[in-house]
Image 1: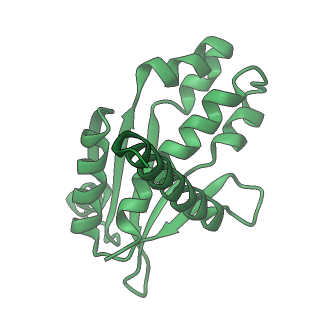
Image 2: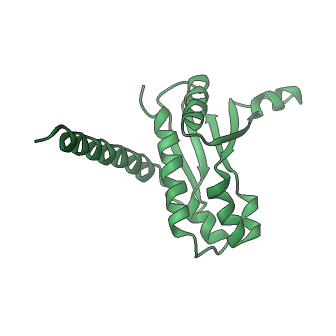
Image 3: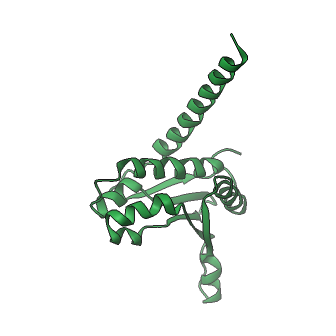
Length: 163
């Protein structure tokens, strides 16, 4: 077998394994209810989860818009809130395609990913299911784009599911 063929086989296997990992994270993350909420449990503490997700977003060349520390905002208002941080990011060439299909989809784009800690100290990554967003805005002409968005957020959140 030639080196070139061997490299192609190795690359194909690596791509297949990555796709299987992303699909397993996304499949395991599906919400059981009809509220459109997807949750993935983090294997790392909040600060590390935020750091990993931001690094993964940057590594993918995705535009990072903002980080909102909701617990700090609550504390500034005299309200106690468990750790809760909202990350806002997106890929305008992908995300704006949803808005061109239905301008009201701008309510759900760019992507918002919430990292929150529950009463047990477990950290969760939470976002709105893209299929649910498609139904919400009656977008039927962007299936490939919604599938891509699902794969990307699955890949991003997979960065926090392993120690």
